[in-house]
Amino acid sequence: MPGTPSQPPSVGTAADPGTAPEIHTVRHADRTALAELPWHLPLAQWPENLLGGLPRGISRHVVRYVEIGDEVLAIKETDDKQAMREFDILGALGNLDVPLVEPRAVVSGRTTADGQKLNGALITAYLEFSLPYRALFSRDLATDTGGRLVDALAVLLARLHLVGFYWGDVSLSNTLFRRDADAYAAYVVDAETGELHDQLSDGQRNMDLRIARMNIAGDFLDLQAAGLVDPETDPMAAGERLCESYQALWTELTRVEEFSVNERWRIDERIRRLNDLGFDLGELTVTTDIDGISLLVEPKVVEPNHHSRRLLRLTGIGANENQARAMLNDLDSFRSAPEIAEVDELDESEAARRWLDEVYKPLIQAIPQNLTRKLEPGQIFYEFAEHRRTMARARQRDVPTMEAIAYFIVDYLANLPDEIRYVDSEKF
Image (cartoon, rainbow, N blue to C red; front, side):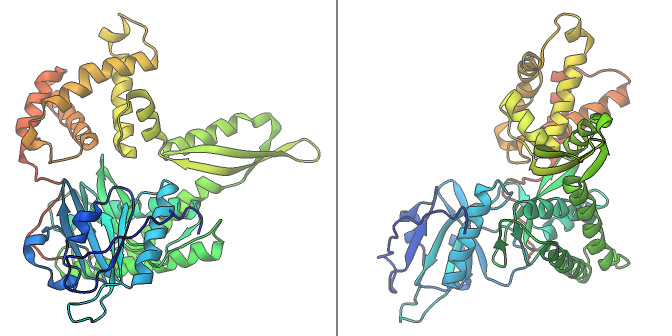
């Protein structure tokens, strides 16, 4: 499979009562600490003092969380070969810059103390500030939470199809979600049914959509049974929304256009539309017909995260796409403010440096340590900007940055639950 990481040497777990399993590690996994875990016990029987009380989505496998050093790891019990296969797929997708949980290790060859064979395990890094969809519905969130999650999943599915990945089990259950300004960003958490190809056929894409439509309807039926959504909600409508969102996005990303040679400006329009959707046009094929009258324009390489990459280039800040869009809008507003524009005609890079020093850094540095677990920095800035606008409307005046920060921390941020590793007493 393209992009599959090479496997480092394995180590045994001599401390275990059973036959020592093999631990295949990658990247930042601590082999020694992993080897000390009770691999001779089925995952469902691991002692509670080892486990983190983090919300788990519905899964066909036993999944548990353990904390090793400063990192929380998710451990999924599955067949040895399947664990290694999914590890390889996640590694390949990571090389393609797909949003996903990062693979850390595979454990194989497990046995009980009396020699009975146990399933292997896939170990991934816990995605901080993320939640399974059921945890989101169990909280008092904004209206149309379901629709926004489905739209995020549609974007993720389009990104997967662009790199040639057939998922085979598209669902909310196999996805984690992070806040992204007023929307959500979706991440692959379960890829065991997936296949990576050079390019997908229309039939493969349509099969993924058919699976998605049925699985999402099932997800919403489950939510209804748990009393988390209105009983009048139509579960099939959620699946249809995903298909409609996906098809509209896919068409814009891949559509071949034909127009007159005198209308080359339409290429710029196409690029701007893609930018608005959060994508860049990395490669474009333009073909002139035999009479030289019309142009055929076909996108060849479409790259995601237009706003995230621009923000990173200007400021060094990493953020999700919609968070980055909000920060860039705030930067543009800062640059055009009379007190800035009249003093200096700042270029974009200089304006970004001043915005960092006068707006972004004062906010982040003012957050007390005990509140840094509430939201990730990109979401903190988005919520601050919204809170500041609400204050300005209520007061009918501009609110100075430090005044706005003080009110934001006390009136808003301090009242939010911690989301870095969200813990809920409900069993998911």
